[in-house]
Image (cartoon, rainbow, N blue to C red; front, side, top):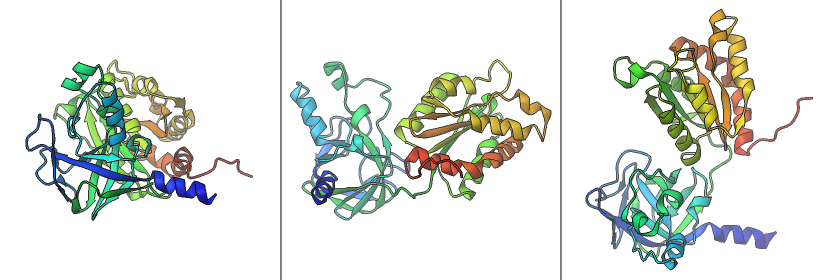
Length: 323
């Protein structure tokens, strides 16, 4: 038992091999002797730093070495990564993992990223490992990291607050012709219930865009809950349920059924809502109606019971029958 514990502790330690920055966007990053990490910003002097969730990018040195053995011959920073670390497989760590090196504290916010335009490495090798193996983090504590520093990874607390994202579907809202009140209403209720709302998006009623964001939020950002608002009616543009079902691994119909059943006590038109509730990996996705009033009512019906299901998905609660 003690030997297994020691192996686990060792597997969460790595060594920083390189710190890389680029002064302007669109060029490869270059190694620097040290990096000054600024809280809630990124590395000082790096063009990709900013007040967003992808402040620092990290890549496993071991993955780069494997790639180079196949003839890639890439140098540090070629993939756009800020930190190259030996001994840590970032891709296997969950979002929320904290990374300690020197005085710096980072927290992982996203795994992988969509590749919009194939880089020179992809064109030469037929693939690029950064979209698959790279991770991103925010800076929680300022400090300096240098090559040779030990990096320690600490897995997130199972009892941490649930993380959520809210997506509003509205053609007029996306064009700026109508103010979105539904998304903020849902976000406010979630925050009051103790959730951390990490993203709020306003999209047109286009299924392809919704599917892309649902996959990114569930797979990359690994949020516990995604709420959508709008696009659940009978209009030909109302495609939210279809887009949601297209990315689902499992159905969770009871939540959508509960919303409809309880909403019928408010209005008979609740029977016209086509919203669904599904699971993708460890993320629950729930469709809500489009109006602020209906969002508040619908979310109010289910919010008190969601935490147990989300805890089961996360693995921090057991699923047992009531006695």
